[in-house]
Each structure stands twice: as C-alpha cells, then as structure tokens.
Image (cartoon, rainbow, N blue to C red):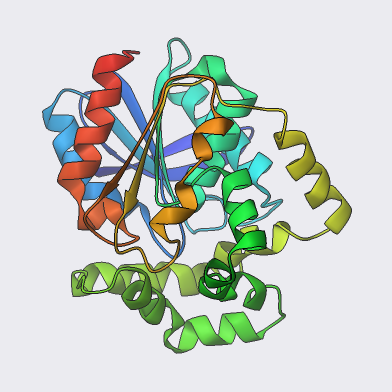
Length: 286
C-alpha cells in the first residue's frame, strides 16, 4: 500500500504518496487538474511490483502541499526538480506527468535535463504544440473553454463547488466511471484547496508580458530527455490529433502512441501507462 511522506523543497514541505523499496530506481509522478496523487495508485502498484520506488506528490496549490504561489509552469517544474534532488540527491530519476503534471514535466526536462533518465507524458502534448492547436483549431478552442473561464474572479470557484469537477471528469473521460470514493476525494481536495488548483491557469496569462516571455523562451528549448507520449483516443479535453507533429519539439528519442481511454489515463488505463513507463526505464535506465 502507499504511504504518505513529507519532502522538504527549498524550505517548503510537500506531501506525497510513496510506494516501493527506497533503494530502487525512483519514478516521480505528477498529477493534473482536477485530480489527486491517488489516481496514480494503480500505476504505482504495478511499478513497485516491477522493482521501482514511486513517489506522487500533491502539486503546489493542493493541500496538504504548499498552497502559495507563484504557480506558473517554471515554478511547478522547479518543484519537480527540487523533489527529485531531495529524494535522490545522486543519480537520475524517471519523470512522469499527466495534464498539468505533464506541462510541468516538459519544462523540468528543458531546464534540467541532467536530472532525468526518462520522461513519460500523458494527455497533454508539448506546450508549444498545444498553443498552436488553440490558435488554429476552433474545435480545440471550444474544448478548452474552461481555461478562459478560469481567468474570471469568483465564478470559477463557485462552479467547482457546485459540481463542475464531476462534470469535467464525465466530459473528459466519457464512458469511464471512476470509483465513487476516489472522485469524492478529488472533489474534497480541490474544493478544500481553492483557489490553488486553478491558479496555474491564471498564471498562464498574468502578467501577460511575463507569460509571453516564457512562451517565447521555450521556443528555443527542444527537449533532449528521452520521451514517450501517451494520449487517450476518447479524450474529451484535448483531441488526440492535437499531439500530431510535436516530435519537432524534441531532439532526444521520442515515441508517441494513442491508446484506449479518455483523459484520466493513470486511473483509466493503468496497464498501458505502467507499460509505457517500464519501457522507458528499460530503454533508459537510471
């Protein structure tokens, strides 16, 4: 079973689920929105059985981890790097990210490639690929309506408290019925942590000049860390087609695959996700 551990990063304490022998190679798993580390539990079970140490933190903004900002992707990436350094001061770590966790993982791979043995990203393609899709695809812009909605004051928090979390899970993973206790934990954690879980969306545009500078800087940073990408064929949040062409953002080994399932792959398709991570670990050992 998973245990809850505390990890200090730059004077702040992050809470995390952990499983597996501490002496084994480390896999760091970053969750997305609206979600909690518990979605990784089925994947962690499979990885621990295969001989890995797994740690899945509550991201910045989600209690019981720090709830103060800043919340832009560079800060989330720095948190990931700090967690890796605290947990494994020597040697490299296998980095895995879903949704916002994937966005943070891409930036972490750009900023500190020496820390990571491999990167496995789920459901959200490279940020530049996604931004291009928003600009060029009316269908994806419509799917991403919530990103604009979250820029508003007060109303997003009210909507999340009144059932928006459950509606997003249904819309983004159509046909998937998450365990009731797990979805209740997601709702409880997100609502109890507000506004933290939606602050990364707000940080994308505030202040505008700094946000644009981060995007501009990322254009020259192609990722050298070996990367494997997995996207659900029925993802209602981001169409699988949006990820096409993102290989141009990578200079290291890169593979991509569309699998069964919707957006919340860690809990929907744990076998496929664990297989992808283990394949990365076999090809690029830490």
